[in-house]
Image 1: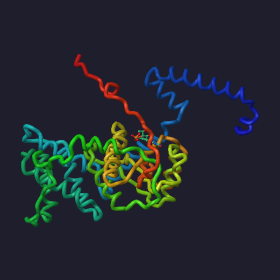
Image 2: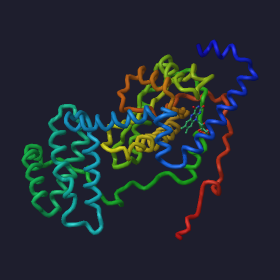
Image 3: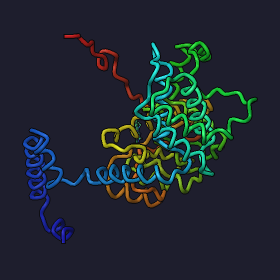
Image 4: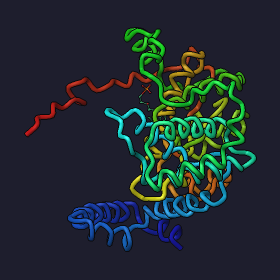
Length: 360
Ligand SMILES: Cc1cc2nc3c(=O)[nH]c(=O)nc-3n(C[C@H](O)[C@H](O)[C@H](O)COP(=O)(O)O)c2cc1C
């Protein structure tokens, strides 16, 4: 019906209709952006563009609570709480009693995690070393001694091997390795990294991708939860199929040797306020991945993933993503074709991206 109408309406009338709709759209946006109640009304009645995000955030919260009961390989709660314990341990001055509000929850979470067969051994070791350190310095209160008892009873057997070197706990900054990279070297790497869209038709070695992902895993993330994963498509046909879901690859998707889909996991959070962290943390890690790839002789191009219903549905189907996981962006990766062009892409000068903060 709509396509018949489209064909029947003459071009000048179509242009008038478009102009009128654009005008009405701009007017209504101005009216409904006056306050948050009108904005909510707008997105409830006139536009459903946030529906998918609402749903994903709620599904994430539900999955968070489900995962607390049936822990699998990693736990955002355990990671967050162990991180908070480490902050308490390095506090200056360190308090005699700290983390009282969440220590029982942490110990119980740890005790459940360590009984799960597939649980990450490194995460468990980090939790255990930090809990050991915590209980060796904290003073008892009724809650802390209860936690100490529950922790001690459950972990007695594990502590039988006295030879193990424990190191997954806070250490002095002086033990960080000195930087072997000068500012000039780093700046050269930044200049060297460009968005490369044309590639040599050559497979991308898996070990190099793994090295780049390992470098990405060292990026900072809020409360060290690392709520993302990298889905790697190395077969060119699949890489192309995935890349074609994104609008920004028109004209060059067909020759991408590999594509990495950066996926954020909303099940890391019980509260909506943290919903943006999947984008922040995944992007920080992605930047490290792209720079690391560059040092390994590989080129990359970040590819936009706007919130477009049809594209979301298509990629979610291809990757079989659960509702609480959202695509953050795609990254093409491979050996760049040295003859291909690089857009100049002038960067903003400091004065455009710096603002002095006056204290008043
Ligand atoms: C989040 C994000 C999305 C992007 N999406 C696309 C895209 O869809 N298609 C594309 O060709 N380039 C894309 N780019 C690459 C940008 O165009 C590029 O980073 C920018 O022009 C600066 O160039 P440079 O990366 O070479 O410094 C994207 C970059 C970012 C950070």
